[in-house]
Length: 267
Length: 311
Image (tube, rainbow over all chains, first blue to last red):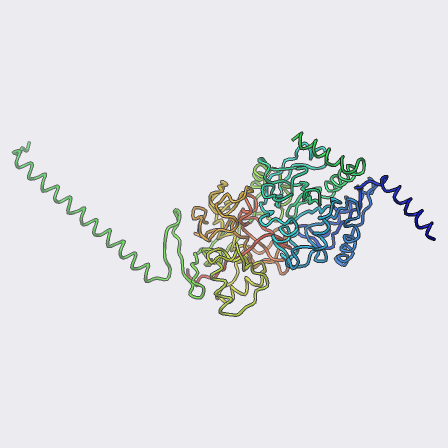
């Protein structure tokens, strides 16, 4: 028995270097509750996203009922810190199973823990203000607590977003549009930095979509945050996910920084 | 030919000059008396005529909430957005999906009875007076910085809270038609001040943040140059404003009544008008309307009362 255990341990140790430190993980899409986009159009966009992810061979689960809030939280706990790059896609609402109502737990929530490991896990958000919550459960506090940046906000309707060269390369579907909740690049603080700005305003202070990362930890990606807009949210999200996942898969860790380093140089 | 000595001519000129001075003095006295009598009349009458722009504005002050209200006379006005305006919007909002203006079409002529509307959005000072006097527990009122400073508009996120205040004050929320007429007058203008966008005339950040000098909402009445034809302030920007109508995006296409319309019987939430401080030229148009789940739109309100018959 002891020999068998030692043999298994040896095999595991030999196999470890062959396993990438970072690997493409899973995608969870939640449309059970939505904000600034109706459930029906959110489901349409989610279906587009799912189809594209399936075609690309990316593992995904679509949670389409408000009864799935607990399941999403369970999924998130399971994948947090598992070594894979996992992505949760929201359509304007922030389920209280991930982040308790009214900022009752500013730190250490399931959602915050998800983006505070070196897996580089991601929240993608469409439509309304990221982490605001239905009926204003969290207001500005949601985003501020998730990023640990006191003053960060996501205002400024109808801000014209022009696709950058990086944005066009990553997401061919992405077109110029007017964002109603652009990311405020000029309010980033701490270790948060811009990895890729896919579309932005004239002076680069507002961006949407944009990938921001907390040092070597998790990422936030607002994608086409518009009030009642019928833009191609699902397709653009899928293209960003496919790009992220393929970048991770080809060459873990090093490839990520190289790619983004190159992109930053181009800019 | 009549001739006169030089001294005689001087006397005549002096006399004529003195007569002219007397006439001028008389005119000055009469003018002063006229102004004084106007002032006395104004002080006696609860209706206080003042001038905003070129239009005479009648105001009253309601005792319960000490709110100044401006008079909107009975008559017709243009409500909604015309096809010609849609063509214009394609140029000034090139990145917007033009379908988003469908809920404002077709434009139509609407008749309204006379009413008074609050000159300013209800402030925190007024809303807290209501809470203190009634013990009412608001469902969702942002009683925290930076929103709850006394002279800032009260950020009242729940429609029921706005209705409760209006009932306490002896008023009501405006219908969407009343709100839109009070904001744009009778000529179908795009913004309260006219048809040209001017970001100095409203509490708004125009997508650039803090441009108007205020981080978020501004104290009420800081942008008098952006007042509506009837003298209502902040009808564009500052806070989105609740009206009494239910929201139905297809309501205008269902031939609604064109005399004192009250909105559909039911709908997807209530209509919000006017845009907020985070908005710019598109959402602050008088005809713009949003409904459904308002999400992160920050909203407040103002009230109306019917004008007495005959006004």
